[in-house]
Length: 326
Image (cartoon, rainbow, N blue to C red; front, top):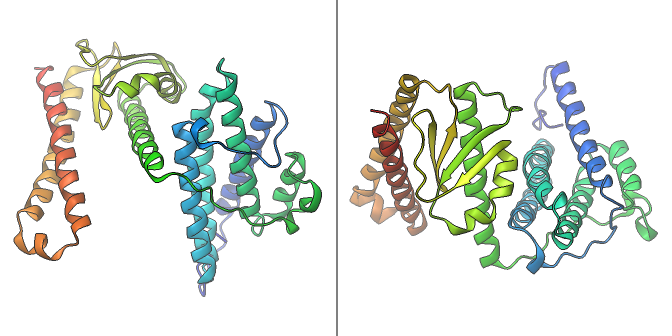
């Protein structure tokens, strides 16, 4: 269904079947991981004040997914529905929220653990109902095994479709900004690993030069997502000569790798700087165009101004890192 646009024939390919199998396995493993930590609540009550920023960000994305799915159904775009669900389940829920949530699940704070598990129940229940038209056998089985099949919802066919949780706008916006910065930092760290040829399953030392005080509070989760042996967060961190760096919204992330080659690191930074300079130049050219400022919506202009500031800040970070290698 995911690769079958309305009115078009598609060529059969077993790779698509493999993708479906892998997706089903991913969902099954997420449900099994949840069950390893006690029985699920068929009707979890979430208190916004107790939710982590990762829970709020994922619930916000669930809300967007439900809206996008409903819109696609109205236009009979079943492949679009399937793609939205695939992206949310695989990416937002399994790859990010479940992994970030392990910090609280394996932590000593029982209240944070229970809040994270309740959020998992809430989202898994929604996921199973949304996926039911596409994979009814698996979802009916999970509905029963997870303990959601109770009372009038004994069979998934009779369960109501999920409703998005209402979240306070300012809290939601704050959480999404912070989580977005954390996830971007983690992706930058994974890219540094790949460029330095450090395997993803191998522990590595990282350092984050950041002025964001809240970043220290999330250090344990950032370190887990980076698979870090250690993560030092210090606004005045001075990197050793053998290290590579990435500029992120949270600050400068350093991979402390003893075998990093300075010449290759200089070459990599030169490419990053050239790319950012080109993007900054294009953005500044638009903002210098009077017709763009006059005709473009205010929101679009502000977005370009924000991008210009972001590009400038990252360029400054990268240029400092490049200068330290000379």
